[in-house]
Length: 638
Ligand SMILES: *Cc1c(COP(=O)(O)O)cnc(C)c1O
Image (tube, rainbow, N blue to C red; front, side, top):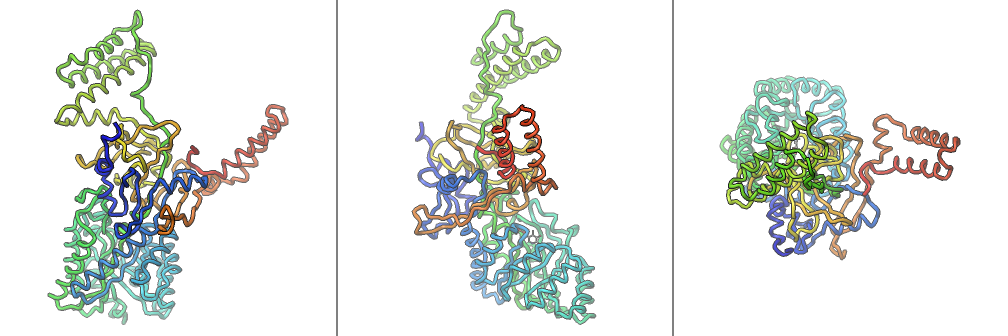
């Protein structure tokens, strides 16, 4: 039976080659592999090999795998695409991209991006005081930009001006008119020339979940009348020379390329009109929004995009050029603040399945007993005579009615526990038969799909949605989920996934399905006893990596930093393993004192030892055990 399923079938089922963007594929042996250089090099890293290696080092799951090569490749892709397009278009400005650190503030991520971007003068963007503090220390390239967004207090502005004293290109983007008066005052006090940008409230809205970032009711930015007042105010204060940048950001994950075209059309007009008023603008900043095709459908689904990076870049460069040429204004330098597109692909979460929850599959004896209630006999007969039904819908209705009657009878004290158990056991059996009858019919009815979801089991995964896939819970973001191995074998069942938090929201029940768009269940293999089964949750490098919380005190994951290496027989080496948060660390953030706790428990154990209720050797063992658990990982040890 094994060869009725090929790796091509697996690729279709999980859509790997579409969302994988050239970085992920299923190899001939049915293992999920990473191509850190896309197809430019033959290099492949088999994820199972990485798992084997970290297991041999005693690392517990779940883990985050970080592929730094992908991060570097994405930085290069964005910069090269802009450079090439600018050249092809004979565009006269340059590209000065910045990475918005809020998308993934991990030091290793920021360092890698800065390093990979240094030859392109790729800069950083900060949206808060703490982010600026980090950026000041890490963006040391004098030719790259630092763009400062978000609401700003005096300290934030002073930090920015401190950067100016260090000769850095700190562009303070005014989000709110009152920030401008503060900048003017502080610049005079500190005697530095600020570099100022203005964020415009655009009429155009992004398309997708984040469209409220744009539009007239957006939280950030100045209206056209405010922009004109700002120009006057700067002129009066002899600071018009400082106004260098025009900025907008119409939202993250823009799903429809038309929104980008519209924004460029509107934004470039405003830019040109301001330039013609004598504002010495030099930079045109289109913000973030370059999306990621999470479901691989190439559509305007919330989790997809209907364009490629080349089209995005061309629309910006050619769109801007056209309007500038018509208005007879010099081509500005172009800034993008792409975070999601740079980081999403480079990390994934690997979790192990701990077990299955399936109440439809309990092996309970349903044999006929004398004097049993008529409802039990009826349900059994329904099962035995199922093939006499001409219509499966009728069988389904009858079974449902019998089960409902049984529950009522039980509440009234008419049915025994055993009788109720029998009825439920047969009921699930009937539904499964009905479901298999239905799926044989050509036309897939909605009820049939519902039945499939209703009967599906749940796989219990060793991770927390709230820590590792926050957007899946918060905004219904779809993330690709794929088994790491066995992809050359048919996945026998459809299940949904639940996490180990005590929260019924702790689940993933949205999966890629090429036929229906989204499905509540995912095809996975049966769990074989004694065999580990690993799932990867992919494209978690943007936002998911850093937005998680400690619901149920599940802490940060152990991180494994993987680099491609040609001379290595397996094609990779692990540069670093950073241990995930321990129970003691998580508890400390909630104001607990782990030392005190260990002491208290030890005292209680000692007390029982002194009373002779625990023997001394066992007492020492229990004390050590408690302390080891404090030092240990917060996830399940399997
Ligand atoms: C969040 C944000 C970004 C990043 O957007 P992506 O869609 O992740 O590229 C860029 N600029 C601003 C102002 C933002 O708020």
